[in-house]
Amino acid sequence: MPPHQTILNRFDTPQTSRDTGSTNESFTIGAKERPVKPFSSDSQPHRNLIALIWRFLLTFFSLVLLAISLWQFSKSQSLSKWEQRWFNMLSILFSGSGSLGLGSLLGYLGSMLRWPLLAQTMYKMQDVDSILGMSPPAGSLRLIKRHIRERISRTTFIVTAYLVTNVLGRLSVAIFGLAYNMMDKTGIEYPILATNWTSVSWAGNADTTTNQAVGLGQEATEGKDTTSIIIMLDNSSYSLSGLEISNSTLQVGTSAVNYSYQLKDFQEGYTILSNRTVHSTVKCTLIEVKQGKYWRWNNWNRTGPFNWGKGNDPKDVLSGVLSASNTSRSESLATDKRSVFPQEWVSPISLLDEEPKTSQIYIVCDKLAWECSPILTETTTRESHQIQLHERFFHPTKLYGLLGLGLDLGSNVYDGSVDNYLFYVDQPSTRAFSPNALDGLGRICLQNFTMPLNKTQWNSYTLWVSGLVARLPIVAIQHANTALPRYTRDTHSNQTAGTVYLHTTLEVNWNRVILIAVSITVGQILAILAVLYYCNGVYTRDDSHLATAELLKTIINRFDGGKLMTGEELAVSLDRALGASVSYGTRKGQDGGPPKVDLACGLNSDFPPFPRKGQFERKHTLKKR
Image: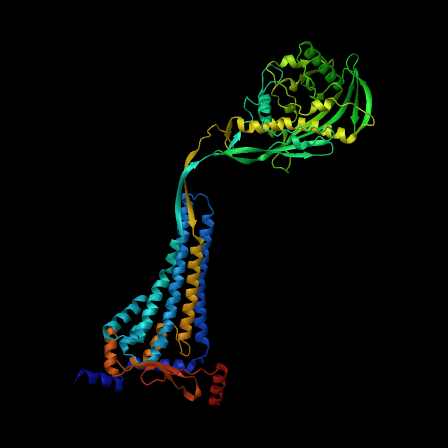
């Protein structure tokens, strides 16, 4: 008997065994005991949509996390070895997750594409087998190769487009590698340098009780050359704008003057502002002087007279100042060194360390004098709290005394007949270059007191004197800030040269990152919409081997003995047995029930909408009654 007859007989008369019969009987009893759940018309599209959304979100959040990693690591100025390892791990992890989500999404779209392809035309079983296995790239490629060898159809182009999209989509996440790069930067790192205010050339380390010259005088003298001094010729309006210092702030109150200067640090030849500001504040009061007597003017109230010279109060510092100044002038007249407009800067010196040193500075003329109360403070910023005394760079009052300006300090010290005090008297106007120069005081000292006193005029004179005293330490500090030796600000070491560095940074082209992320996201959405549109009107089935086996049961049951065949051998045998091509379509349901889907010959290619679940259940119940 020919082989094909044997196959036909198998189709006509299926062979059964005792085991088969018992199994069928048990299946029948089980089916009667557990009725099949009615089919829901919208369950599969709903499941498809949920599956696509989950796969889309996996890719979307993977790209978001990858972008966050790029942003976080790109902020670092230098990545350590462990930071580089962490970035490599996270970038590979999120890229792999994104590629995994894309592959899963495209694979699911491929499983949906099978059903409209099977429904649009008749296929041999070899084509059916290839279309059912087209979801992975290898299955699509196998179908395309066979079609190229045999025949090219519309299915070939659709599967080719899907294969290209599938492969490029899975690899698209790798394009992120073009958006960022690890860069090694080498160069010389220059430390931030700060002025060494503990240098022996600065007044902070000088012993003012010896003849040692200190640096304040030199710094103030040289620093004064950089200031802008404009002496007002109109004695009635001495404007303090003429006492302004570059890179400092001048504030004039009703009775006091304040200078603020923010210290500078240095890096690679450039100056940068430090976090410390020095404030010099001075308030002066007017003293009226006559032979042997003086009067104080406080808030324009005249008190006195008080004696100075012979018979003065041994505890009155001001009387000692006037006596010391008078002695200094007498010596200047004797040596013919007195200037035309004599002005003297007098600083009291305490002889007892236990006794608090007076902080007053005195400016003395022939008939006038000013008692000035200066204070030097430091803050961390222009408006913040003051720095504690033990943390300051500068003494609160020491810089105003002009002590140690001359090489011979003793020649400028006089006895004012006051207990426990000597007086340092300096005549800046007798030197060509002086730290203060007492600018404009020559004209003020020639003024006479005329009653009633012109308060506006004399208040401007007093503020001018306050400005002269207040600017002295600022001028000196400003010049010394750039002239003194320096050390590294952070380590206080003398190693001021730069060091070679190697910094690894992550450079990110954010335009590319955004473009790639948007392209992948939009591409996913377009692919989903295209497949949903193409599958519209076709009953799609899930990607399950059992569901596929149930669909193929109509054909496979007509053939026996193929369990050990390869897929290609089984497809050829089925084509011979059927003698016709098959397609995916529908049959009418029994008793008005939902239509049935099948893979066979002569099926309807129209997929009518399912009746609602509630309508089908009511019809099924009425039929039973």
